[in-house]
Image (cartoon, rainbow, N blue to C red; front, side, top):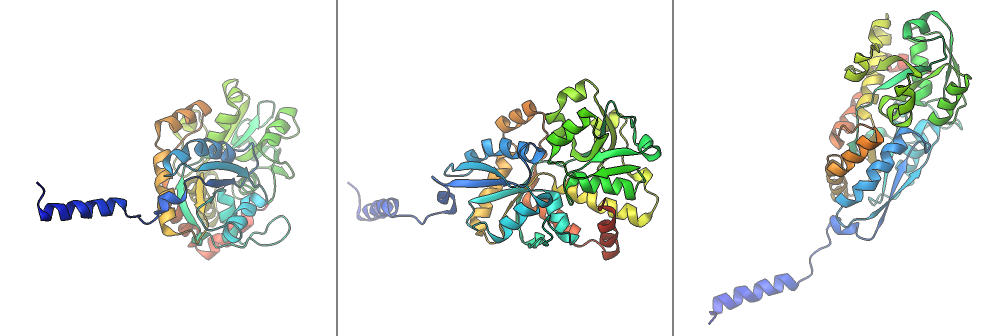
Length: 347
């Protein structure tokens, strides 16, 4: 026989079990669609990473929403950044892979292709995660007379780029202005696919600012068959694989202290920002916590890492706080360094 006290506790337990609980942020995603915007064209490294992560991320968001990847190229990534900041619903159903250049371009006061300035404050975005610490390269095709960066200092080379403010353009420009490369920079290519094709056709000698991990994923046969000359690796800490191939870093080529500091600021930020994932400023904190936890789990998931290995891309997880600190450090760079950086990234 159950005593009166036991009956009271049992009834209380039943009441608690039957009473409705408040809806948590986790429940919000059940049955929903999450728009995953990639701020580059469809064939680039950002899109490759975005598609891979989107394939796995939903499993780690309670409620298992559907993720839909959409590309939104333009203005070196500023088109997507402007959209995320000013137009995207702040409900946790829109996230984006923004380019480092869309953020650095705002700090540098650059403008979009139509002449209008970027209209967002990079420090107010909510940063969810980073997927890698990218190393960018200058490279030429096998038929080019430019085989090494020392050749680029002595002989002219035609370097193809995309739009003003893009990684390809800014990296080609600073190698020209701060390191002394004799680059003739030709704008107008749409993306990595067009640049690779132009190299193969002999229209251009090569490119700068392309990601090493993406290059291995997109052109493994070129690397296998030694169709690429890897001129220089742009990073703060050297990449072991590239160093073993004898690819130098930029630092020994820069003679001016202010130029060196400007290049360091740019390279450090771009490497730390890597493939970063971002939410609009006003998304509720509980949903940001949910998304950050999902990214953290997904980027360490065995199935995702296996897919990454098959795709030949590297995953180096970073927290949202890590990415936010990189943005804050860029925004706090000394004004003379920022002014010089503005000059050396223009073709």
